[in-house]
Length: 193
Image 1 (cartoon, rainbow, N blue to C red):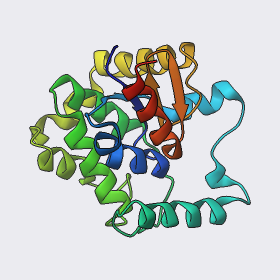
Image 2: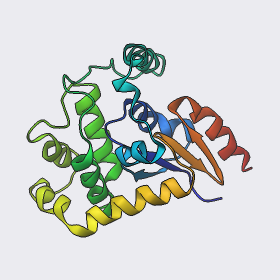
Image 3: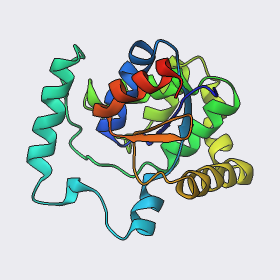
């Protein structure tokens, strides 16, 4: 069976919860696939719950899940949700260099543990450095046409495969949407069916 793939966007706190515990839940580190959730919002015809009356309830649920999972307390950035386009291009670059997991963890920690905004000057470079990436190359890398194209293509391929949001974990031919589906995905992975 092909190793599981976890689709994520760095602006998503639910994806943070999934990425933070995917390896322990599955018993192996899934392939992390950066996709742009904003594009999916357009394709599916509605945006984030973060801009609806259910915002406070979702935030409280995320905080409760983090506690239940034994993760650090959530500290919400003042400007959340932020535009994740540059961050997701940086994630594609990190994947190109074999460091997407470390980069994603660094960005999620900065946002949801330290309460820093994706739009904060220097945040992505600091996270790249923390992930062992050449941070001085970040600005040029995320402006490269091939990085932009890879993100567009990965997002379109995920959509074509049935992914409609993040986090989504692909195990075999099945898709598990939501960090709360990790245990179901792990059972499918262990069962091999």
